[in-house]
Length: 493
Image (cartoon, rainbow, N blue to C red; front, side):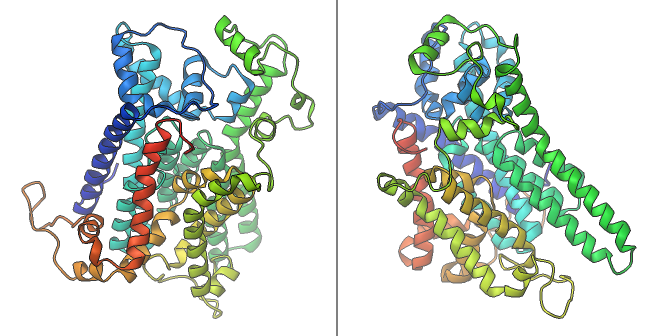
């Protein structure tokens, strides 16, 4: 997919190393720390487990905590309970592909063990591919190889690290989203739209990505007004805008329609194993065989809105309670990071922001030669996207998910720290004046391997600036703390 130049190869190498280390650490923490008895979704195991299954559970069981259990359940049994429809089908479908690939081992392993192996394999792969996709996107948008390199290395140490390997959909979503952004920056609108649509089938916040397509179409519209028929271009803009909205909305609409056929139309229910029916009775879960749920009679019967409201209590300012202060503190670093990035950008380019990224200054000149790095005018639309996600997540969602919500959706979480490191870390400036590591036999002649700048900073921690310590301290603390807590059903969701 991408040519392996030296910097990209170093990014790939570091990403693989971090994922292997993550899998090893989660197995270690899962073994030595007893699980917390949390009130989480825990369906009964229908198939007996053998010795190999117990081994797989011991090594990879830490990847099945909290929401991961929902994805595993959906991949194994389908959408049996009403609240299962809070989780989109893209990732469970990928897990089903993994179990099919492992079918020759079904005599030795249960389906759950095959699903755990699929989680570890696919999410490790997706998170590595997302790292390379982010590096590729950063090179195109920032036009600053150093910042692109730093951003990709920081993604390897993402505060949302555990969710990029555990049985969550974040890794797949990040890969699809960053790839779609990169395709759009290269002018491949159709490919980008397809990837964005696939991302919407993985996570609902993929719907917000339609803004990238609409903004790109508006830029094309205004740049063509001088030489082409305005009316014709306006009609073309309206048609392409409607097509973009329909394309990205299609996976969401199909998923809602599928839920409607299961719960609101007679004769659509599937047979459910008795232990799972008993679980529904014990826990109060709604299954399709019962009475029609109230959302079936809505003018717009969207199960997703109903589930978020009734099962998860998601709504405007609903999470603003005194007992949620610890969760707000957990989300504070990433919220501050995005808010700081927004303030820095807006104060640097006030006119650009007022004109929605279409004009750099008051002289009505087109954005022909953007500045390199985070402060490039091309970053504007990404910053708006990050700000919208931050506002929605902070005001309407369970605020503790902000770290993984933003860490898997927007490159701003990595671009702005990379900008700060490059501009405020003296050690990095001294490294930039030195030649990169000399050739090894792995590279073509006259090429050099880039230094892993993040590792250089960690080796020289005591001499780093305070900004560098804050950034790397935050990334590494959440990287490790997430593994420690999440894998043992402790509060890290």
